[in-house]
Image (cartoon, rainbow, N blue to C red; front, side):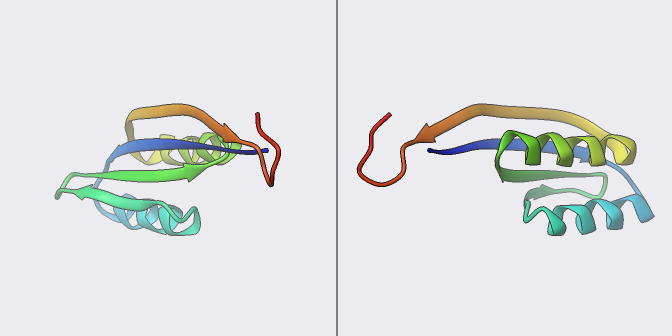
Length: 81
């Protein structure tokens, strides 16, 4: 089966931490959905482990808030869940 989760992750940071947050987001293929001079909100989809890893990497940079959908799943091919 295929399983995915959606996460919105807010990071509040300044200086070089902002650049690091963007670098990590790019590596995880996260999308910036909101940006201010003090914060970013990233949208990230993938497996639970991917979201967990992204969140842990953002924690020392300035993780402020996380919202997750939980897992959505569907069977591959003709099978049904």
